[in-house]
Amino acid sequence: MSSPRITVLMTVYNGLPYIGAAVESILSQTFTDFEFLIINDGSLDDSMAAVAEYRDDRIRVVDNPENIGQTRSLNRGLQLARGELIARLDQDDIALPERLEKQVAFADANPQVAALGTAATIIDEQGIDIGSAPVLTSERTLRWGLLFHNVLSHPSVMFRRSIVLDECGGYDENIVISQDFDLWSRIAEHHALGNLPEPLIANRYYPDSTSRRSMATCQAESNRVIEANQRRILGTDNPLWRAVAVTQNSYEKSPDYGGNDVLRAFDEMQACFAERFPGTDGDEEMTRFNGLLMLKIADIYARDRGASLEAFRRAKAWHPGHAGKHSVMRLFGLWLGGNEVRELWRTLSAK
Image (tube, rainbow, N blue to C red; front, side, top):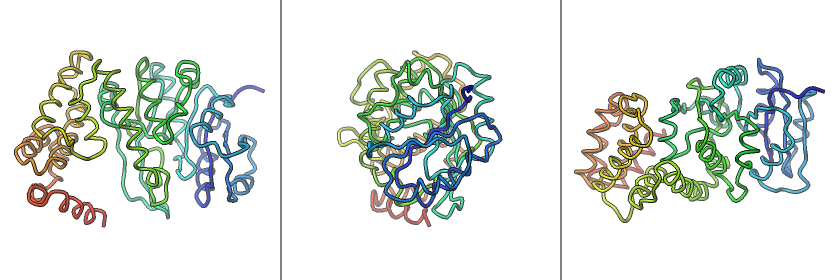
């Protein structure tokens, strides 16, 4: 039997009530040369009975003898996968029909890209669109972005199995939630990352999702990845630079540094990156991305009004379209009320 081009890899633990929609979205793909490898990680509900209702030879279910967690289950799936390309999907998300087709076409045309994500639509428990998750697309901006947060959405990613398994050794089993961020960061040391700007998955966001239940663990793990990325990408371990990056990821100001310190450090980081990766000047996507980072600094350091105003000034210059949505009246409120007003604003914005 010839090997399929793609292995769609999904780990499942108590996947009801959403797993049916996830499975159907894969079976409805326009690209059909794939196997659908489902690792059942000791589900206690009727997830596997729901999967068994789909009579499709491309589905292959493997049961773990006990619950071993997502990271170890993913590595088990990599060992069992027969496809040269691995496409991830989570049990509660949905792949749009042309997702695999478009990612394979890009992978074939861009062999230097080892891991490829896509933008996403955000849906709620009922499957209603509630937002979008745009992505960075240029190789340089993706590398710069790794200094601040995860740049690829795990359930959207397609990657080359040989690179991940043979060169990187798979996912780091010491990491519970942010194993994907760590993996992309290690891949990027020697290979390019990519993103398709078109939303090709629907990412389900609801109160009981794993990412929301484990936010503290996710943040702590991702902060450690960010610290490692500073050494990988900038070649240094500068405590102030690290504070800038961790501040962006955790959305909390550093207890050790003020807003002006953060702005100065950001400029130093940019200069270091431009020296190590020439061609940064004139990169419009990076300029817009830096405008978003400045908006966060303006928000986080709102009580440091001079620094906040300077960060907002930069944001308007670098990303005027987005900065226009970030109302000056809101900043006035933050300057006056700090965290209390920020939380009120978030509550009102969510309604």
